[in-house]
Amino acid sequence: MKKMKFVTLLLCLALIISFAMGCSGGDSTPGSNEGGAGSPVFLSLATGGTSGTYFPLGGALANIITNNVDNVKAQAEATGASVENATLIQKKESDLALIQNDIAFYAATGTVLQKFIDEGQYDNLKGLAILYPEVIQLVAAKDSGITSVTDLAGKKVAVGAPGSGTEANAKQILEAYGLSFDDLGKIDPLSFAEAAEQLKNKQIDAAFVTAGIPTAAITEVSTVTDIVIVPIETDKIKTLQEEYPFYTEVTIPGGSYKGQDEDITTAAVMAMLAVRGDLDEDVVFNITKSIFEHTDELGSVHEKGKLIKVEDANTGMSIDLHPGALKYYQEKGVK
Image (tube, rainbow, N blue to C red; front, side, top):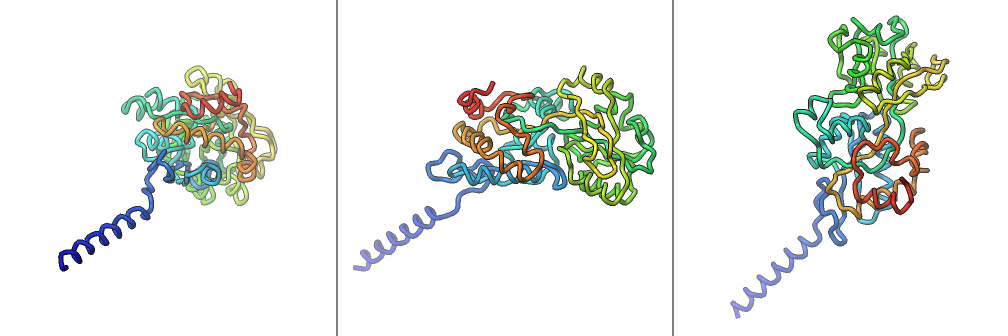
């Protein structure tokens, strides 16, 4: 009898343990449980600093994915932006990421930026969609006397957060004008929010910002400090294009910021959504589909969201598409 009771007790314990394991939460690490029947797929979406365009847009993308793709939950994460985001994808620490198309190309080919040259080609970085133009905005305090890129020599300049596309753009634009970081009086590797604060407090003279227009950080500065948006001339943009073909010429319309009444010529690259190459093909197909079926939601979050269109999804794509995204575009007849 005692033996029977002991066996019954063991069976009960086994059932309790089995039930507890079955009801436990899934692993919340990036890309965990992907493709498991009935198991949620947890995805991390790397964005940028909280004062740029990437952060609110990334949050909207994550919400669209979570609300419209079965068994997928996406979470937007604030990061140092493009260069860091490419690394997060390669290391499988993020699953999706907003990245400039020029930075994505450098990462995938292991070229241009020393970090990518040293680390080699990022073979797990694939494209999902081109989104909108990323405008390079050089904003200066009006009382700094800066009206041209050449005037930055000897000045205190914010050149973008470490590991950001802005930092790379600042370096390349200075090179087109025969300058380098060494020619500046002081360089500050600041995020958009930090640069805005230091411009307001007269701690720096100017800042490079690569983001959609309008950019919250610049708008904030312009409300309390007189600013100028410094142009990048057409001939210098052509010089840039000879070595870095992803640059295009764009216009910042007059009235984009307080005190900026005239159109300003500058350069731009393209913002894109990248994805881990080893993420499940069906998951990526459904993510791509959900985004382009809900572009109205993106437009309600940020002006740049209104520019996201499926017919432009491959214009400026600088790296290989993920097979799941490619399948969606083929179904939609997008070249």
